[in-house]
Length: 192
Ligand SMILES: Cc1cc2nc3c(=O)[nH]c(=O)nc-3n(C[C@H](O)[C@H](O)[C@H](O)COP(=O)(O)O)c2cc1C
Image 1: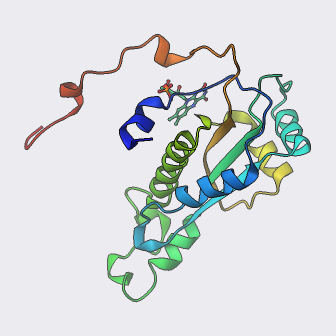
Image 2: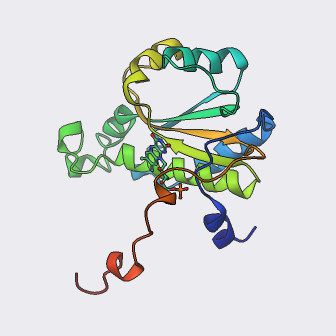
């Protein structure tokens, strides 16, 4: 698919068929996702794939929710790793920036980089014919982290559902009720 067609084809799919994408294809998509630019080439991004029936059930149970029949067959949790950036920025070539402590970072590049990876993952998935849905975790995060053994020092950026849309899937959510902002409202050139 042409890149611009991939971008246009992507939309949040919230109702999935039970068919699980080939795990090797998911690995390929994550290999593409991790190739985003990262500050200092720190590469502090981790992906946790949840695709076994048991692990999926654990996630739903930890979230205190009944697993729906049209739930996604694959979830990818995307994490940033702040410590990897702090230690990278204490190295000789970066020490001059004085970014060895988290508070010194006006923008936390670890979260920037992991967010870019989450986007690249979604586009790679759509390019591979797989539907996606990015969402946040909310109150269930702590319980899910504990059940899945996630290290305490990682930031959860978001979760990406992967799979194939259900035959009767229809768009829902904010994008169906709100208009896209006009380009000239968001694009500023040469001066704000
Ligand atoms: C940071 C972030 C958090 C989101 N959280 C949720 C969520 O909790 N539940 C949900 O249904 N969609 C969530 N979405 C999806 C957005 O609602 C969706 O991307 C937006 O309405 C535009 O629709 P589209 O993805 O179909 O273009 C989230 C998206 C982002 C980027």
